[in-house]
Length: 191
Image 1 (cartoon, one colour):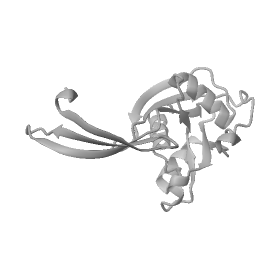
Image 2 (tube, helix red, strand yellow; image 1 turned 30 degrees about the horizontal axis):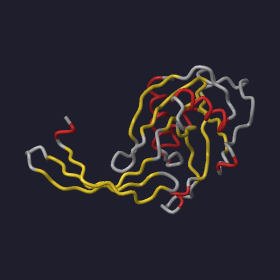
Image 3 (cartoon, rainbow, N blue to C red; image 1 turned 45 degrees about the vertical axis):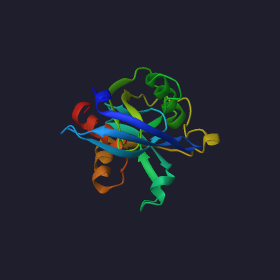
Image 4 (cartoon, rainbow, N blue to C red; image 1 turned 120 degrees about the vertical axis):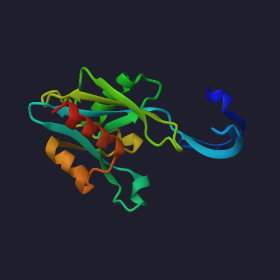
């Protein structure tokens, strides 16, 4: 039981501006039975959902390109190609991803299928990400997408051949973890 191995001593809030950053001091009982004092910072930004839109007949996928500031100062131009995604904001993963995919891509999808969930950076971020796939119909696009300008979104929608998207992983043109995971899932299960 985790409760038998963890004793929390102190939790400090370091920042609660954009999301919550805390520093926790705790004792951890090691596998040899000894206790060790540790300190960790955790960033709580809520949970999220992501989706890969695919068209089996055309062998295409819909991705988005948007600016991500944290990657900009880390040797990247900041413009990542990604699967549509967003935070849950108190909604169920299924409800939120349907709204998010329409906001970002303009495509309206009916049924979404959850394929797995994962912690994307468990060493410091509390977020659990729910992964979905859905088949899209090119005729079911009531808007152009692009995101919500008031939220700072300026999103370009990309419809790519599946083979090209997979090759873009190897070339580094797609460097987003969630997108790589969904594309690899698609290569194994959807094509």
